[in-house]
Length: 306
Image (cartoon, helix red, strand yellow):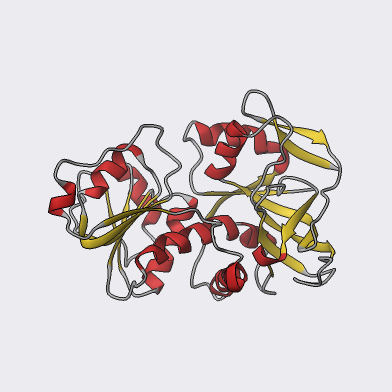
């Protein structure tokens, strides 16, 4: 089958590869759509040549799981490909990270939910309680950031989105409940900070956390190392900095299926919108991945697989 795989120089190229072999709990999905995310960018740079790419999957089940778990053959599904492969004609996806797509939801929208949605939920859940909380999301115009601010708002939080420039603030103009600020304008304190940038932004964000607050870092953007501000521990008593990985714990007690199902229902009823900014053929994926590395790709990009 045809797939996009990694190269020696950290890019991707089309190759003919064998169909994936499923474990007992995996289903084989004929892929119709996927996305380009920063996680894909890092995977391309760090994985050995020939590694399949693509974390998001929307498509149709063509082979059920051997252990009987998950949707049946012919079901339209969306899921998170933990061992990648969404940029291929077929992908193996574990039943714990795969759900049927709601009837009113397009494949494009379904593909834009799993990776970013699971990451956003994992970051927001780091504090344990959101109702009435003051929440800051850095990198708010990115794919994860746009879903994180919406999910925080639905949870009853007072939400602020950090943007890199006044111009990027306009990308969030449709959220009239959101306060969009640059780093020079942010003040705090915030009960929860979901950091999606890292580096200097994370260093500054640490100074904005409230006593007893949480800074949850899923940072994948900045290349520089963050530092802890002087006297941070004394000035922010009880505050915690935690690392979050979006696929961690998803298989436990059906958590991944519940979360993906929730994201699908919220999108179907238009309570969240992944805000797809570009939809194109997967033939364009190599160039778009390079553009993402140069930070020229904004919002959520969906690639249609054919």
